[in-house]
Length: 444
Image (cartoon, rainbow, N blue to C red; front, top):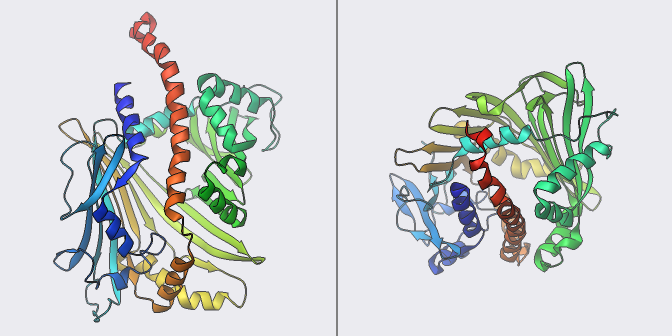
């Protein structure tokens, strides 16, 4: 509990970033976050940015640390490893690929990297995986007939699940119901090897709950009714392990639990193969497939075939997640516009997917000898110089929501509401948790 207390205190600080004047000035100079990488090749040659250059690699460095109730972030003259808990070191680096020519104003291509690391004295990815493994054993309704015959019907299984969740976390339950209208929680079926659970959460966002955050409310009402996104996690046999998405105000999250373990399922939501205990895995591979659509003027625009292969490894000290793009994304646009969109963005996306080994990222946690946990994260890809695409990026920047910073701040306020709700329920449960220390049955 002391470890969790420290983690919760840090989470609260992380939701309240405070930027130094020098960092604010730097952020005003570089492109907005929506187009930073699109314009990366032309950024390399800029002389008005405080680059640190080592062997042709140009870096912008930042550091952060707790400061009162906030997390203070500022620029740093060099990129270095954090030397104490809760100190963040982050960087944005650009370097030319071998053999490419440089012009006076830009590089024809650059390899860009976002990364950072932080130490904590709490827990790493391994403990999180173990916690998820334990949580899966508690995902069920009443596991009693009448059984569901098809997914998606809200009935006694859902009611039993929600009542049990509410007994444990009433404040969190209230908060969820403030922002979401539940259409379904889970479905329970009887199979040849016994009952199984399809966690099939479907809910509708309640925009009125955002009215207390006017900038976020306007942003959601402009984007939410037009946006559709879906992410599927699959194995090498194209069986699903998880499905989630957003469709013009409706959200969903789907996975299957059999005997308290995660299970794969087919397109008809029938179980396949053997379930797995995540906490016992030492390595694994899966794929994610993502599609994004925005509907404007009765036409669909977006990206499809955002496909990645994901590698998981775990040993006594380290847990790592390695993700690599394995296909070229496909532009989605109406007939007549598709060809022009492919002309503008096609080569850029092919370079991201295939150039210099293709886009890849890694996140890892490692237990150190002094008892701290070192978290690292990095995303790397090659980005070509595309004047046409940069023109549209600059145009998008010029018409972007002028309250973008306020929207992000209000997004953090919503996250703070859910964190506060969890902390309240956690503190209310504290006496009962502490009493477990005196339970003779648990001390044997």
